[in-house]
Length: 188
Image (cartoon, rainbow, N blue to C red; front, side, top):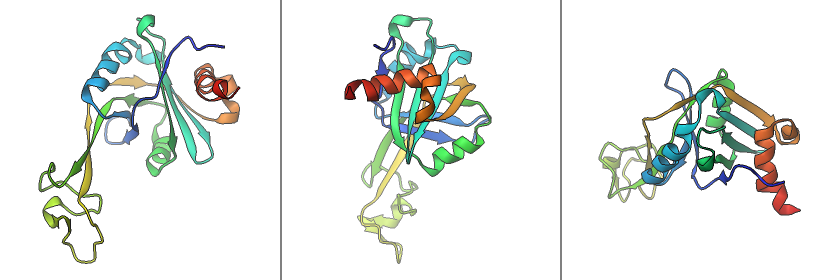
């Protein structure tokens, strides 16, 4: 069995955003050009009502799987990533209400030299509270580290969202195709 759709997993992970009309599922990329090119060449050509997102759980991990039929089949591809379950993932699972926006974003790490004074460090204190290490008493932070997520403006509405156990994927063509091609086929 070969996959009619190539699978793409060369992105950093998936973020979840809760403060829109619908929750957001946000694949994260390290470069804006890559994110824009994939959106314009692949996702742009998907009809909203045909987009499918599957979350296939196995222990502490899950597969994020996204795909659709395309108006440009020669440029089509599916997206997947195996990720660790997190509080944000669980919050999305409980609160998505059957629909979400899909958006792409660029994830960039920030350090003391390329962050603004009001940027908050992973320790919870602002950059201007740091001189190499955190100056706030009782904070054990040894180095200013932060990140920024820049959401791209384009979005699509997804209403076909399912959460599955890995043992049940054979009944779902998108999930089965992805997991078969990317996990089982290589182990045969």
